Length: 73
Length: 173
Image 1: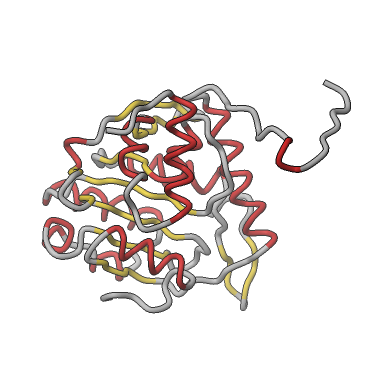
Image 2 (image 1 turned 180 degrees about the vertical axis):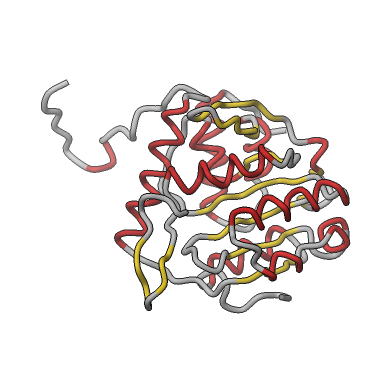
């Protein structure tokens, strides 16, 4: 494809959509997970944490690292 | 025992979520015959919309035999971690339909979901299968992911829902 030039980041297309259910998709995703963990290692407090709803779990996930402040454990 | 990306932290080996570790988890679920569907960001990735995430989210059937199979699978992975026994069918079928499990020697977590509000229960989750190096993985369909993500509290989920809508031509209904 060579070099493409854009006047702004907004003009740049996102990554190409990949074929659904291609096993390679998960390889890439787990590779990204590994890379993210390498950039920003997080040590989690082990255990089981229980939430009254998926939204509660998502809120906890956004508020602090997993395992720190369970609804019930 | 751990994935290739295991690292050492405070004199303990810490398993990172990488492909090898994920396949270990997915293979254990399959080996024990757990009724599950991969949902969330990894399911989106499987459907071709790949972004960085560290989460593994599973929808599971909250029946006594299935929860026992899930616990057996987790114990086979995490050397009989006693905290796994805190996962119970009474919770998943009752007041706590969302459970997070952080393994003793892992810097990732596994989120287990048995229902999403009153709208989604395990039996209603449309799924497809993908095989990753011989490991069969049950993955939620794009339409299902769209419906699950569009109404949650997280802004990222609404972005994901929009990406799914555009990529698969899904309708708001």
